[in-house]
Image 1 (cartoon, rainbow, N blue to C red):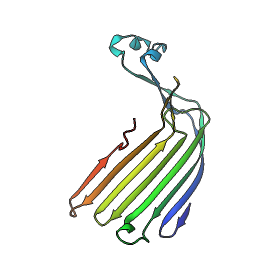
Image 2: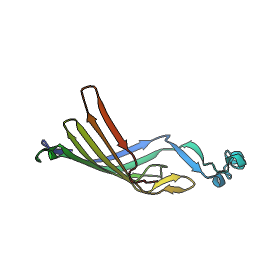
Image 3: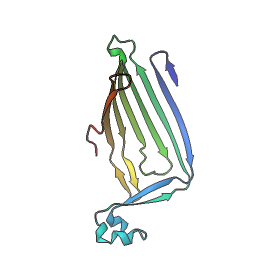
Image 4: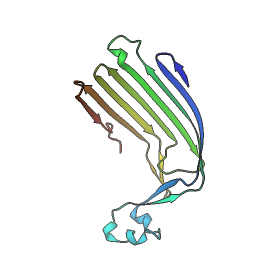
Length: 171
């Protein structure tokens, strides 16, 4: 990490994790579940024809190595009212020794924040690449999500706030 006095921070890190017994979800369509001895009785029942099925299993030792980078910068040097702006961002790259369901190999985020007086506004963008969905094998598509939120303090005891999730309408 390197702190830029009064205005921000830059961070770079390497990591290595060793996980023993990680619980992972395995998802199946009704057709896929029909070949699984535990799920087959349910998958063949017409009452469950449109259902998705899931089981959990523990994995042997999984190792994950990766790199992450992040930054944060406050624009306090700008003239008012822009001196309330700040930005932050991060990127992470994972390299597991085997695919891990629901964990992306690349994840990035970017945030723009405005805080001045009684007003706070936030815009947060989150992106991840394709994620391994299950041992079936299927994948979740890459996804970008935008959330905005804000708060206005009206008095010492009263404030109002809002949040709008998934502004881009990502599936």
